[in-house]
Length: 133
Image (cartoon, rainbow, N blue to C red):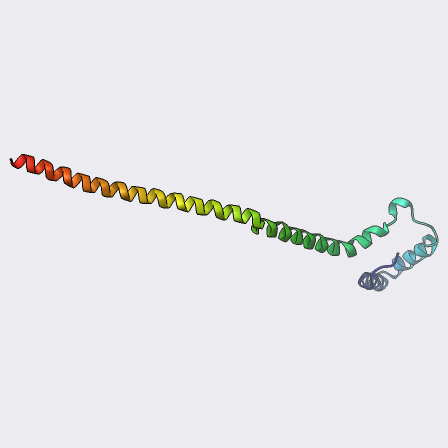
């Protein structure tokens, strides 16, 4: 498994810093690396290759999921906000019927008020005439 260039540069800088500060320790570390490098790492110390690929794939997977979710929301909301022609016609018919009923009630109310006004003034006139006599 290879390292990213930035990680390799960081390790090289650490190695050079160690060589300058403590040459004996650097030599011991180099000897250890020569001895241990041909050996295979124990399973629990190995890095899984899927973990390194995961950080490359994860942003793309999240973006794809969010875009799919957005498209799904627009599709669902588009169908909800635009009812079918039959439903729209039924709704329009209900609104028209409701408006007509309200208009009839309003006309009846005006007619009753006019009748009361006309009847009320006639009754008032008759009562006034009888009181004067």
